Length: 97
Image 1 (cartoon, helix red, strand yellow):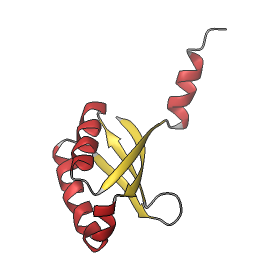
Image 2 (image 1 turned 90 degrees about the vertical axis):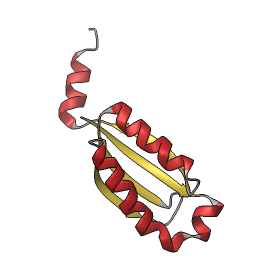
Image 3 (image 1 turned 60 degrees about the vertical axis):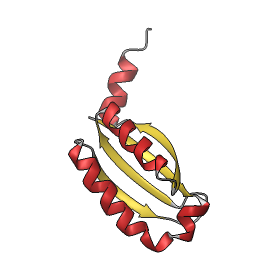
Image 4 (image 1 turned 45 degrees about the vertical axis):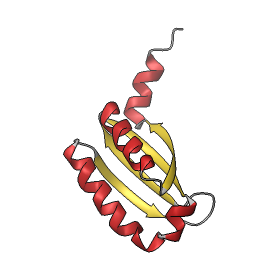
């Protein structure tokens, strides 16, 4: 399974209804689980990003979930593919000498 770090910012619509954010998260998590995407963590933050979450799942399923999330109009996302130490070590071994 691939791992992702997702950085989210509230849109104008999303900040106007910020009190609904925990409920929106629960709905996202339930929909993600149906696609075999695990929400590993979520944090509401202060600073440049409003929410940080980590996901794990098949690339196409994660992409579908994030497109669905963005289409609701409450957040903009920036997604980073993340690699564990073991995954990164395997990648480095593939670099030609």
